[in-house]
Image 1 (cartoon, rainbow, N blue to C red):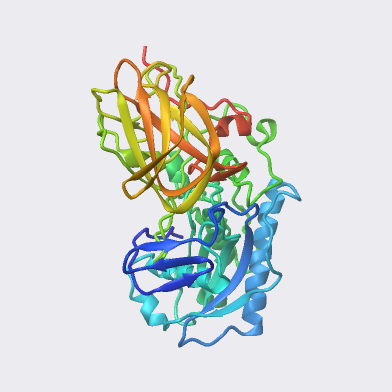
Image 2 (image 1 turned 120 degrees about the horizontal axis):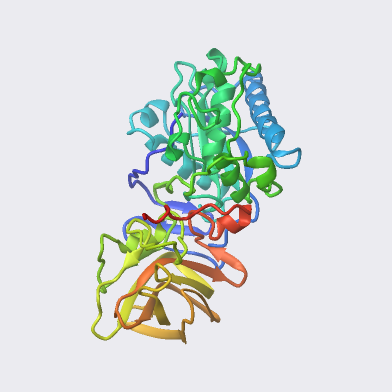
Length: 447
């Protein structure tokens, strides 16, 4: 019951859908400027992976695998309402022959086998990580032992940013009793749910499906006498994963017990480093410094926190604070995975409701030494929307006009092409309003 390692190893040239990645130069192009628009829906795709030296599944093994997936679907249906569960892309498993023997994948460092399988699956289905409409639910043919022990993750990290991947061994369903309870847990990881210890709960005693409580273990198709539940933090994350669970809504009166103190952060898993694929998020650099323990790369991390407190709301792990600029101009350079078209930005700056807000922005596209100004506008609020005519580039520059402090604190950015969000933050913005619960964003101010 693990999530996959983020390490990646380079290998070969690959052609993946319209994405062409040139390993030697780390450059690639996309056939269209809308290639980064995420899919409207994510469905579970049953798959059996067969290494080059392994036998294909029997009809019984395929039937058992599909039956377990259906039972997992029913588990979520019983807890989310009849229409709230996930959907399957197909009613039976695809059988895919892998390119290498099982020993090759076993020889890799922990988690790296899953990264290779993600690469091969995206190649097979001719989709990019950005537009993949599937969570690949993979049974790996291995009659000898339970490797892989079971793992799941979203391809792009966070919640609601695209497809996912989970793997389990055929041995687990041929020879072990608790495959079904493991499957429920790993499916949740593919939707972005973390272990409950991320929220401070005990992994061995929690009632959550995201714990390792042995009282939850199934026996074949038969459920435990004390099956797991979805605790409020689980339900919150599932309600935000609207591409997988489009009909489920968090309802506080139903889903939040009286007196329950919900953890104030939505914890997420990071993106996968898939061989021969670009990283999911844009890369940030700045000549304007990183101060107060912050890093510019924090703009890809976790959630976009509100500016207003109570108290001082600066959080160095979640924000980027620039150094003081003599001319009051703070520069941020963005390098996207490929050429993207944008028509709108949401800029979240400042903290504590009064410090280091950006008062204006100039948006430029970069092509070598050539800069093309897209728009230049004042920013009247800490959370400001900037609209402009469609512009396309891989490299962009945002130059912020600072206030009297001559510094800018940036809490996050959101990117849009028309009405479509691109590279959404790991935790959906304004999630508190979405679930209708006033969960404090910050610890109470000390008296």
